[in-house]
Length: 230
Ligand code: CTP
Ligand code: MG
Image (cartoon, rainbow, N blue to C red):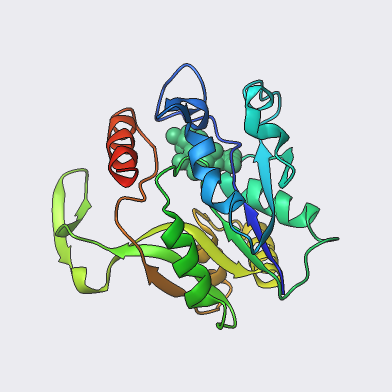
């Protein structure tokens, strides 16, 4: 079996409200997406990194990394799950059903090299796959009617999903295809796999693998990366 990576980068970053999609914002002498790609590109087991981009993306071609021999770009879709499914469909002539695919957000720049290794080491013997995640630290409330607390959810069972999410190529493509065709709201790869009735694992990683979503996340990522490089 071989290993492939997909880094969805076709979003516009509406919650970030910056002058350009958040994956192209500057962060520690590079752009966000260059950090996100770093440890996938350098991993010797990963054959190639596929990146779905938005139509008329004028930022990607300006990056030095865009000419990296391991990178292939293509057109993304309306939602993140569409971008990923478009990519898996395009990969069908090179990837086998039992191959592994790691899907990692372009907006998640603080992924550590050790976490990529941990994910591969932990899941390669599994039949389906799983995700990098970490246990929820806060007390979580279920709220209705805008501000009314219904209950406190038992935190013991709650984990926060991160990326990379690593699944068998054929299983992930089929699960995404079926879930999207059924109109299910799919926010990560594991939710498609779960919806299709398959079990998946969590692999506990550090909680600083944050996703850049809002403006305040960028200085936080700056701090996390500066500490990782110490
Ligand atoms: N993404 C994608 N295709 C889409 C939407 C999102 O490839 N149609 C990618 C984003 O570029 C990002 C990752 O999926 O790297 C996670 O999505 P999210 O954080 O929601 O990014 P955006 O959709 O760009 O942000 P927002 O939801 O605030 O608009
Ligand atoms: Mg989004």
